[in-house]
Image (cartoon, rainbow, N blue to C red; front, side, top):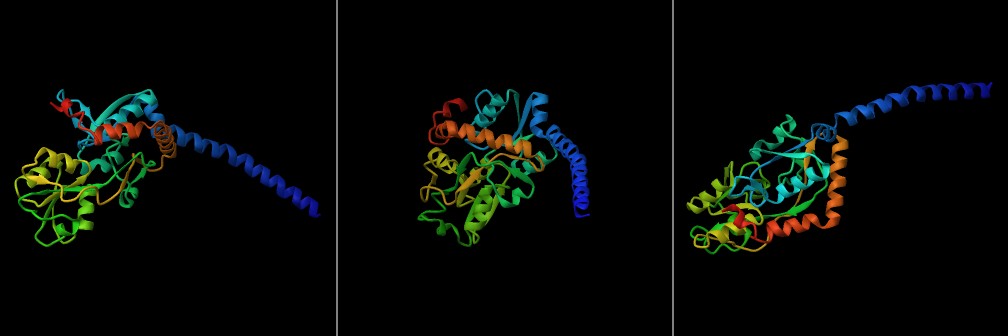
Length: 275
């Protein structure tokens, strides 16, 4: 009797598996066909969301986008064998634009943050950056450490929706924060003498200090945060995330990211392209 019951259970299990396995295969096939990576290959065009942010992405003298992230986007499209379409977007609205399907992936110097990870999936990091500060010689005379800027009455300028704004709030909560949609507006506020300092991802503050030595200075060297930069895609798309992670590992092993980082972040050899 016991042997008959075991045989019946085995038969039921085999029947269940026979029904479930094709269904599971169908689900996997459906997920794959709906992935962004498959749609990009079918379309023949990779649409990348980005925002202007020196030296990540900026326009040269001919009006074409150049910069570190532009190189990354071009290399990714080239390795995929598709055309590249750059979709310039206001930084504050770049995640909503991704979620509504205006482009396939964000490649824009985006730092991995827990609040952003609630809305998008991040790839593994392909670069690391940090926040730096450039100050007004007139308004911040004698300031030589971060604590000097964390005082009531001190005004800090930054770009809306960036990790710079978040870092300024966290590290200088006593100061007043002025936010702008574009970095040039924030820098102009500093140059006009309406702010004590401007916070941004390095090396931007250093570039501004070198560009305006009569008005600006670096109160201290280096950065006061360290942040991993990654690509962002819509949630629920494991195939696309897996492809991007594999691509980043392979390209990083070549030393390509470091090579491009040194060119864009540690030299000004590209400056002539802007004129």
